[in-house]
Length: 212
Image (cartoon, one colour):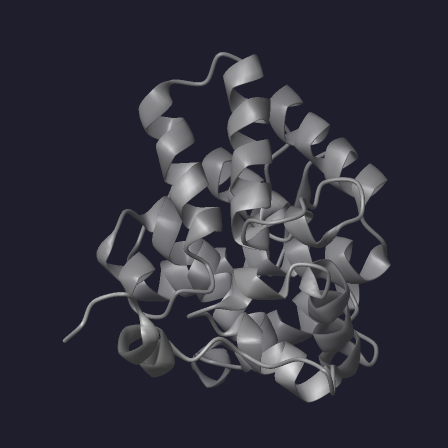
């Protein structure tokens, strides 16, 4: 059965259904509902901005974007965004998806916490970031109709979301603190882990092996 929320159709292809099942199996309600909202809010922002993405690719990007926070898919060293992006690549390649489409999904996930850059790339990349920014940071929320916001949240609730998503971030990369260097993720650990000390970029420059 086709599902339409706030005028946005959830892709119901075999690929999308399998992606949903994979993510549902790996995540809790917090990350599952957040990922669906990212797709819906990204699609709504795209509609507002005149950006048209392949809905199936955008859906996979949105659904996999936080997979690297989960116990099943997170690694030990690299950024969590790369864990999700790499898993999406494996998933899409196993279904014979063309490389250019795989690249768009990979970049959409890998760059979704990198300010500004995704907006210069294809809609499949930019709109993952748009959805994340709307749901997590509230950026662009005021540009969407209240009725659409209500419809999305009714379908995919966000109880105590702000506190819980911060904790989910911390749980996803507390064991690999160096992976947060140069990213917004360092802010999370500074707030929740008293023992965390971020790598200082200036100190890296000043203390490296070059004599001057």
